[in-house]
Length: 509
Image (tube, rainbow, N blue to C red):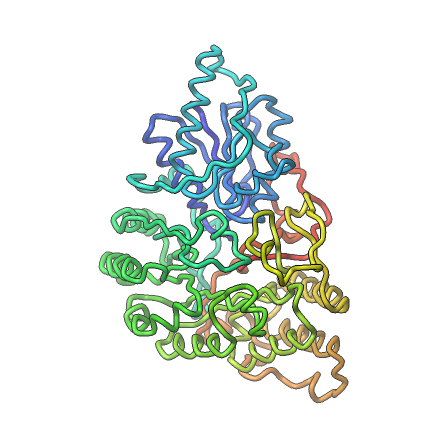
């Protein structure tokens, strides 16, 4: 069967969630073509070639863009079989979202995706429609959640755009091609604002060391000099992570890497970071989320603000840079929390380490979120917004809505202008202090501690030793205007119709 796998957004890296199912489907005898709408267009020939299309939706941004793309695909090919697979396919339980496709597969999707393709192929053959597509009966309403993941083989990256089309490592004034792999799926924790526990319920699934190493081998052959381990938390399985790092480093001693880990895992595993650094670890992404301990408790993050500062010190003790992510705007945020946030960032010398978009992120509460069962949301939650795929909520202080909008606007403008991060942070700090009522001109004008002088460019920041990827870390944020306008066309020269007037970014941890 001819299957088109479609990605709309995977944080700026070559989509693993196309490569993995492509390998499974091809080994089962199906014809597969892949298209990544974040960097390329899909042609009329590709649309007509496909007998079924499956959209990868590993995050909120991808889900919103995929809904728009699938609608246009179905308009051009009425009756084509459509499937959404990945973490955010769980939203298919909502009746409105359900209209976007025939099948929704969350969790460990490969076995269920293969089964769906096999069933669709069988139905088409029975209808004598192997050269075209006829309308197929939908499966029963709901979402398939797969958990078995064994013997899937190595991801197949054949026919995908080269690594030069994606985010690169910026370090020491240089740009290096970067790849992306995963050594595990799911998470053993249940942070209430995160989409992972909604699907995995505290479970993890490991990817075999040999499979990870084989995928890394292929990325290196494509030119990768750096690899991101994109697991929700690389240290969920400490021993597995070490086995993977040792095997990869043994085969490619010059390869550098980064990974994501919770603050509590950084504290608990501080003894491994000397080896991680020696094996090529440059930075660790960690969801600090807030500088208010009460909010951290509501989110069930498992750490305090002091713990976050300790995590920074542990990583830097071994020459590894922390790259924190935040969700500053929540229903419980007060103006002083924003002042505390900018103070924490500059006080811990994190100005160059935090992407400016992080300061304007607003908490997303999608259907099924564990936050919906917490008493802390009582009286603060509004109705479900089908376009934004989340519930509305109001800030405790209405002035925070204006501040959030201003910070998001500054971040978007700075990104489009490639503005030095110290300049952006200083402007944001002045806006935050002004909103909080500070009128002391010395306070408003002082240079942030630990940041580079304002005239430094990004290249100079990197020369100072702050490695990062060239793609801002959006996590599960709503699509920014730039992402929407940059989405590729359904057919060459024909723009993809995506939601207009994108609201400010919202995110999970």
